[in-house]
Figure (cartoon, rainbow, N blue to C red):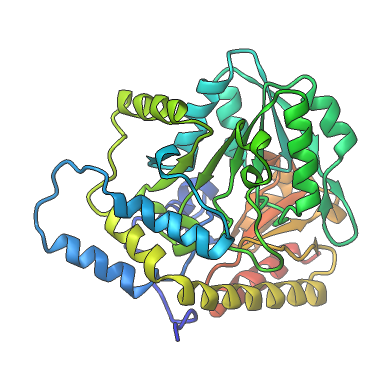
Length: 384
């Protein structure tokens, strides 16, 4: 059994979350619960793969090996029940790298790209940074969750060249169900809209089952670009490893060529062996992790409902992120952030970059003692 509650120290970890807190929040003593990586050690078998690679003592240029891709293919088939075609897969350093390049492959300057808000801020950044236009399909709040406004979605898709789907959804934690995905697929096919499906959180399902939209039928498969990675699942974000799956071999080859033009088409010396180890041996470890996250989410929601009832939070179906509704305070995000940082010494992601003003995102993938500390600071910050 893995001890996910063991004491950890990331002060010398070159961590953006911890070492970058002062830069991002303007104060040294800030407890960080923002960046979406885990304050949990990656599995020991992944560390052993790193050690074995380090023992080779030569770290020259690499070339891709079949086992790297096969490890993901086998993992996805066993865990999610579908088969990825090897000749349509490409390595990419990050999902954001893939997003940037695919946006430029399938759209032109001035085209509209649809997103569902609130949304991961990099979606907006990559669309605008590549001189495309953002179209917003706002998710509808229900008492316990979020739903897609399909009437609005269809109207916006009529004007769109591409759509970015986040499945599971960051930051709300929705796991889109088959009927929802079928409606999205039908509309994208109808209006000839290319679909980019970010599935980086697909292993972190807490309630329900992940369904990759490209597996629904051949029509949607022909227009879908799927992004996957081990980095959220096994806490390997610093490894710079992800995968992109394309509708055709030709598009896969074009993507690899675009990667080569910026010199990031080769995996680094360590990522392949570590990813192979993770996907080959990680199933039991992941189940333990998911149970830990479920426990943390329950603890956090119970604590907030009891001690900070003005904050509302819906139980996520996936991810280790809580989307905190702070609108009852009737304050601008800048003031909310000031209270969190100055009064509570707590660093969260505020809602405006997610196109969700009045909200904040809290990362609960940590030992319980850290979660308790963060919640206490949240309570102090929001005390009136």
